[in-house]
Each structure stands twice: as structure tokens, then as C-alpha cells.
Length: 137
View 1 (cartoon, rainbow, N blue to C red):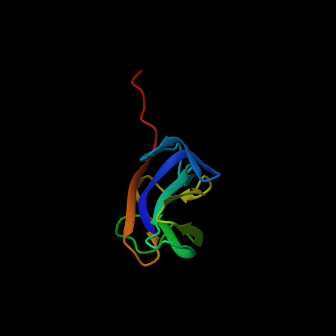
View 2 (view 1 turned 90 degrees about the vertical axis):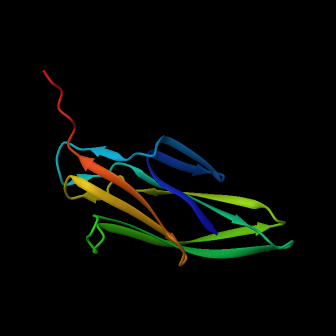
């Protein structure tokens, strides 16, 4: 299994293998005060291609975590497994949505969501949390 993309969205859902996204690729969170909840979903899309003629089942592990640049301790993290069936040389997409609406951001600044499948490459998605811009009166 290969991880294709990771991003934040206002809302994501998966129904019968189909991904629905509202407000995708969020990279700024405007919050009136801190600490603040993120209020978004984490969306990841993985792909598998069966290189064999037969069918089979595979289990892949995932791990995601959020932190501040240069800080080793994550603010929050999640782990789990994806069990997939495949066969006949088909390419199969596996959309995943993780609810981060109640995950807390302690202060304004830059943060990074990291996502890894198995022991593969880490995909990172930076975002910024800040107070809303003021309007000139």
C-alpha cells in the first residue's frame, strides 16, 4: 500500500469507498483564543495495486501525529490498521478520514501533521493556527 496524499478538510466522509470532502486542503486555522480545538478532519488517501492474478488480503499499519516544528513530543497522535482485499491486478483507493475537531492546539503558530503507512516514508502537511485578522474600521 502506498500513501498518496494527506490534508486537512472542514469535513470529510467515506461511504461505500467513496470520499466526500468539504473545504479541502485547509492550511490556516483562525481561532479567537488559545488553546483551541482544531475543528477539522484529517484526510488520507492510500492506493494498492495487486501484482498477482489471484486475490488476497493485506493488513497495513498507520500512524499519524501532530506537533510543532523542532519539538519532539507530539500534541496528539493516532494509530491503527487498514485491512484491505485486492485482486486481479486492480488498483484500489483507500480513503480515510480522522476526526480532529476536538484535538487541541495550545497556541498560535506553525504545526505539522505527519502520516506514515507501515515503515514507509512520512508525509507531512504543515498548517498555521492564528487569531483572525482584524478589519480596519
